[in-house]
Image (cartoon, rainbow, N blue to C red; front, side):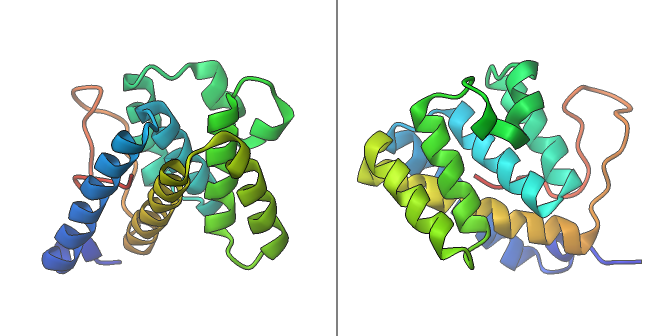
Length: 164
């Protein structure tokens, strides 16, 4: 049985939570709306295969007004016209941040971002991706469970705050 590293080392986890809170504020100040932030969180969590974060951020995206249709096609966002240029640039940066070994994808993401985002938005999108990648690792290595809701629609198990 794995330990929940967020519970085992609460000071370290609290520092990550504080980082996430700062990143959310930076994203808002830069003009990235909550939907764009949640799309980044979800796309990174899809790539990393983090069930807990996918569950948590799907619910957060719905609360932020995201549609089931866009959530359903998020993994294939490049093949649709459902996402704005800002969202597409943020998603490209998120993917490049999640796989930093792909230099071609990084250059392409930056090129796309330069046409759709401000420098502050580029920085914020990358910070959101960095943060959710860290939360993904916490949840994956802890094997945080995704359980059927037994109460309120937002009932959660595992960490109390997730990325971005």
